[in-house]
Image (cartoon, rainbow, N blue to C red; front, side, top):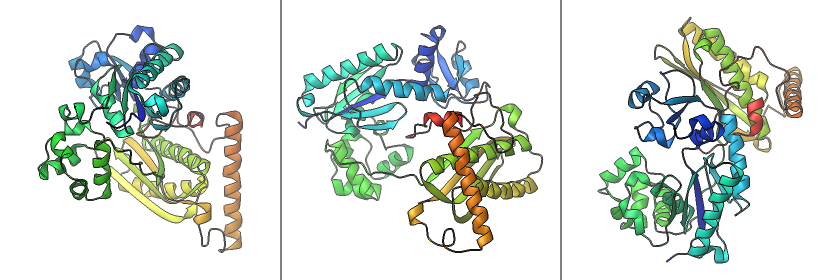
Length: 416
């Protein structure tokens, strides 16, 4: 039996639980958190009361209300969920130091020495649940898995919900009762690939060799997966950002071409601020739009690495002119901008810093300095005090920032 080395915590129905903690009138009621107050949108989270009716993440609200006529729809407040995320982390760290934050509602802790003994690990898990309830609120529930590695500890959180606590200390133990898609990293496409290889259960996957797993995955990741499944503590590969971007489904009154253009510019300004804050330069800008008639449009431009907002906005304006020529006067549903081909300054060579027309270099230096000055004002006053163009007003009260898989926004992103 491998020692218990990890405690993995997964918050249950996190967004909906925060709303129930914030608003007593929602407690015990079926709740769906939505990006906008319209039946045409989808639920981005559902309380356990709503899940009992079949409402889940991705369910169309029109359909959700058919399933659950008493459904309470609540506009998403991503800034509030980030605030709770930090409060929950502070409470948890009174019990154990956090090792890694996996997402807004998931993190793990490493167990040391006698903490790895089952009775002590269970005691710490219960203590963490109590501390979160005491410091943050009784409606913030979590499932905890205890296992030899973080992979299996996360699997443990899926076995018992809500408010579960599972030890994965006797492998294969409860694994064979699960479906392949219950394992992190096995989605629909990977399950299809496994089935083509004749593997339809976790028991069959358990019994293959590491090299066979590598062949099925067509990469070393398959071998890593096999070792994780068998309880080995193989390190996860560190990932680095390859792009920075923002997207937004537009509120109904922001779907005209001009308001959609202003929104795209606003999203790009936010993305460029994040780019500079992380110390990157971008060499490519991608812009995409989805129209109400179902048409999708995409364009991108490459350029010498830059990090000032003015350069990016100039390229966006060029792409918008092309879009306007192709689909004039159409109404928009969604816009998205992505800064790609990221570089650190010390990896950049060429005409950005060393050559080029002196007048062009002077203009670029002014743009860089002005962008930095705007950043300084924003950081000093905790809000944007100077705008570039008109800033669209949204129902959510902030633009662009939302919680994505594996990325927790910085608090400052909600006031820029």
